[in-house]
Structure formats: C-alpha cells, structure tokens
Amino acid sequence: MKRTIPVIAVVIAAVIALVSFKPVELAPRLYPELEAYFKTVNVKEFNKEHVGTLENLKYDIYLSHLDKGNWNVIFYCSENAFRSQASEVFAQTLCYAKKHKQIRVFSAGVSSGEISTKLIEYLSKIGYRITKTEKEGKAIYEVRFSDKADPIVLFSKTTTDISLPTKDVRSVIVCDIKAEAECAAIKTQSVPLNLAFKKVNETDDTEKIQSTLKNIAAEMLYVTGKQ
Image 1 (tube, rainbow, N blue to C red):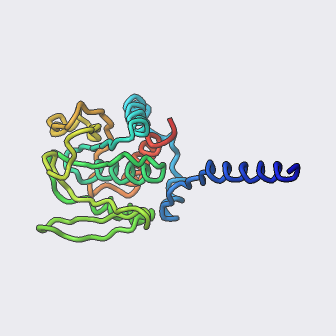
Image 2 (image 1 turned 90 degrees about the vertical axis):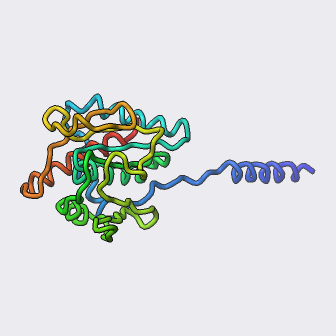
Image 3 (image 1 turned 90 degrees about the horizontal axis):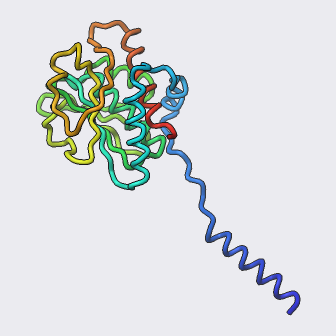
C-alpha cells in the first residue's frame, strides 16, 4: 500500500493537468505579404487630432469582447469609393488578425459609383488576393487576406443599402464634414464619430495615394490594438 499511494497521486495529478490544460490559441495568420506590410506601418503615425475618435472606437472594439455579441462598424464617406472602402478592408483584416471575432465592418456613401482602381491596385500590391466580378454592370471585388477567413466583399453602395446592419452599429464618417458639403448630409445608423481622411482622386500621384492609405492603415492598427 505504501507504494500505491504515490502512484495514485501521480495519476490524479496527471488527469487534472490534462483536463485543465488549454492549448495556446495562435493568432490567425494573414498572407505573408500582408504580415510584412503591417509590420512596416508605424502605429504612432496618425493625425493627432483623431486621438479622441480613435480612443472611442478602440474602446468599442474592446467592449465587444466583454458582451460576447456581434458589434458592427460602418465607415461612411461621400462616394464609398476610396476612404471608406480602405477603412473597411484594413479594419476587418486587423480585427481578424487581432482576434476581435465579434466585430463586423462595412462601408457606405451618400452616393455610389465605382471603387477606385488605385485602391484595388494598392491592395493587390501589398498582398491582398483580389477577384473581380460584376453585377448589373457594377464591379464587385472579393478581397482575401487569409485562406482561413471569408473574403471581404467590396462594392460601392449608399447608406440605404439593404446589406448594411441596422442595430448595434458604431458609425464613423471618414470624409471631412466641414470641407465637403455632401458629407454633412450623411445619414448614419447611430451618432457618428468623425475621422476625416484626405480626399483622394484617381488623378492624384502615387505618393499621395500611398501616404493616405498608410495613414488609414495606421489608425486601424491603433484601434484594433490592445486596450
């Protein structure tokens, strides 16, 4: 009996260890090119006038972990062609990478047209895998950032589009409501936060386009970081 007791103790300890052991959940992997790109983004390089808005958005994302429910973020712009679409892509990608599983991201505009080809070219260049289709004469893009995640489906839409959520929404306006008259008329699902990015046109040079997109990426990296 004297030898039996230690053996039983060891067995019980082993069973407890196996039951209580939880494997470490690895962070979801993006495509290697995207992993490399986001490492080049300096999270501190953002418009300091945006700090208040970014902190509010960051807190919303943090709270989504606590209530375990889905939370929706909609980025609004004038045409839903560049800034709001870029914000949607970067935010959804980083929410996946940072394991913010309850966050779903959308975008919309006062009017709808075509998504900027310059944006699509940039996203492809930094590592997104993009497939283009058409519906009723308008371009639709499936944007993949990982083989283990559903693609982001990008298409230009207005604020009344039926694909947009109508509850549990944080609204963020990314055009300048002071300088762009059409932005002041945006009707959002909730009281909006303002996060104005520079307006980009198809005729703008590569440097301005890349600078604006990297700025958007930095701010989305900031809000999806640790609280």
